[in-house]
Length: 335
Image 1 (cartoon, rainbow, N blue to C red):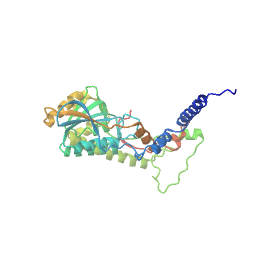
Image 2: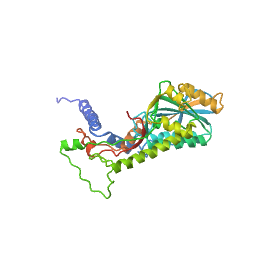
Image 3: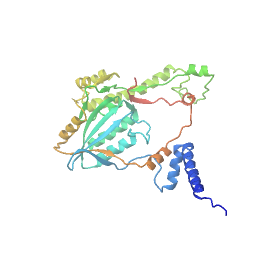
Image 4: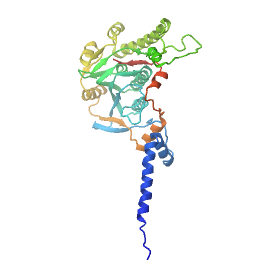
């Protein structure tokens, strides 16, 4: 009699082959490829960045119809967004401020700042949004964390009251624009740069040659103009004489205690004190204190990752030399 072979072994072999194939595909394909697979099978959800149009409320404490909203600014202002980072993107911060401005239940906002600053344009946009928030009748209070320097102070200046920890590092009031010169490195690597330009200053800030005196004057004039704008923001926000602001805005950092002595900070205290101060200024005995949150699925995170440009490997770091970032104007503490 012919012996009957069990069929279960072949079925398990097929299943195992499929599983191994999926694992290998996930390992070989970039993250964007996996996100693309999810997009194909997941309906019509947008694959764009996670720009939240409406934020949920996470209750921190309190009760009542009136709201005090905590909005957290952390990390470098205007830094590229990363869907897998806990740092809020520039767009999400603007979205939160706009929502608080429109919500009639929101009576006050506590801006929790823990940032060394960042881009001049990004800081200016946040500052303008906060002025709009105040124009909408909302009370604005700032609570400084470990660091609230340069652009971190720039966005704090409109607040009706600023709280800082005694050891908070703030100040660094000013503007910086830095360029990198690696002419000697080019020569050692045997690389040469040939530039054909329509004007003498078309390649201003070039990393392969020293700046000319005329170029240095142009860049310094840009820095000075941005600095003048920073000074006026402090004058208007803090009510200090312009001469006094220019005296203390020489780029140095101050502790929270020193900043209070200089009039850059109103009170020493943490987030709890700032919340209490916001209620007081808004005339609230009780209020529901909330943070804005946005729930995101793994699929949404992967689709957002797919929308971000993927850089190829550069183990020798040559791309940083041959394709450098252009100089950027920043309100940023850069030791």
